[in-house]
Image (cartoon, rainbow, N blue to C red; front, side):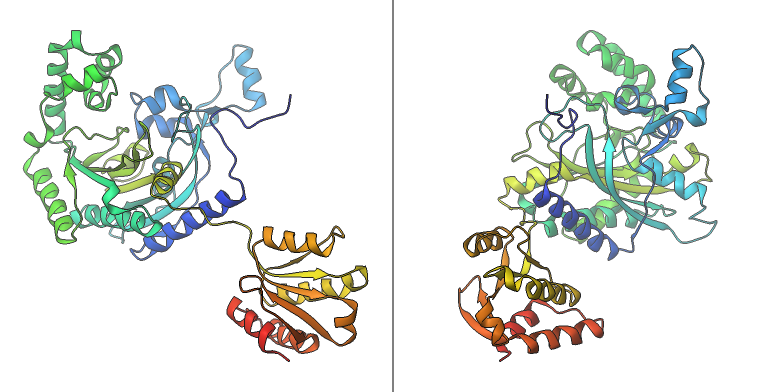
Amino acid sequence: MAMQAAEGTRDFLPDEAAFWLHFKETAFSVFARYGYVPIETPIFEQTDLFVRGIGEATDVVSKEMFTAVSGENLKRLIDGGTIKSKSRLSLRPEGTAGVVRAVAQHDLVPQGGAPAKLMYAGPMFRAERPQKGRQRQFNQVGVECLGAEEPTIDAEAIIMLMRFYETIGIPRESMRLLINSMGCEKCRPAYRELVRSYMNEHADELCETCMTRAEINPLRAFDCKNEGCAHVMESAPKISDHLCPDCREHYEAVKTYLDAAGVAYEEDYKLVRGLDYYTRTVFEVQVDNGMGSQNAIGGGGRYDKLVEEVGGRPTPGLGFALGYERCALALQAAGVEFPRAQRCDLFVACVDDSVHAEAFSLVQAFRDAGQSADMDHQKRSLKSQFKLADKLNASMVAILGPDELSEGKVKVRNMTSHAERLVDLAAVKAILAKFSSEGAVLTPEQMREVLTEVE
């Protein structure tokens, strides 16, 4: 049987791989305008980092993490032994915990220092049931801001996220921005008890999972997808009615900044996000068209206690992550097409074998001058070479034959207009050599000028 990709994973073929690269570069370009810089963290971390940071009661930790075990440790477990805590490793299910660990470990926010604004992109892993918009290996782009607790940071991140979506091509009218406040350590404990009491009063109407959550983190019941549970939780106490004065002031300030920026939003008191580390502001962006049941394309919030949870000094934080695969579905629903990965500025076609050496030299000259160039390497017919040029999306084709070469000429065809002309081969090579020697890059426009104006 032919081998296939593991369930819940998929290959990015060239066109989509090129778009994923464009997606990341666009995100980083937008985020850089707000002062964010890149960071790369390991794909796996100590399991305890996710247990302490994300929360043991979350589905992510309790059900969905992939644990990585070395061959030696696997043998030790099979033999009835145990492995050390530092050797218990898991593939990252999300990006925040690893970035926060790196900030604490390397002291990227020294006492009294400026906030660390960090952005990242890469694969995450969760053992979920695969479905449309949900993979076991999926890709996220995210940001984390550590060291600032002002509401301007919250509003700035939300605005930045919406600006990115619009830049990448998701129509603003197709998106819904939901916001909420989850309170802080002053007001949330009492609110959690209110929710727990409410859930106990309606225990016979809630699923077993929700009642388990009631003992550990009752707020997670707001995120239950069971229709019966959702109906019950509609009448649960609202966090907005139980915020302390500081949290209420912070939340109102965030909304004021969003209003001033013209960013439309909906307040959703049931929005709790999926991870336990959030405090105060939380937000989520949803798209209904083309998404199925998984309609969230990104979100995040504030996590002012997370750095302490992973062993760092008290440091406020805020971040968000957006899922590439779900964004791609939203873009497709909006009619956005992925660009073709294959792009060739110049294809050199050979009339016969006698000109291969000259064709190879010309291709290299264009590459050294910064252009994408290619030629046939399988001795195809001239007709087949033009088909290959079309497949490579070549903008120009240089046709080399014995007659042209004996005159020091090369025939050039514009593949859009199909116009042809003979140009001087030595003059073309001289221009390319000048660019190459100066370390300059020939632009596509300059290339077209070279191939159409040189006599």
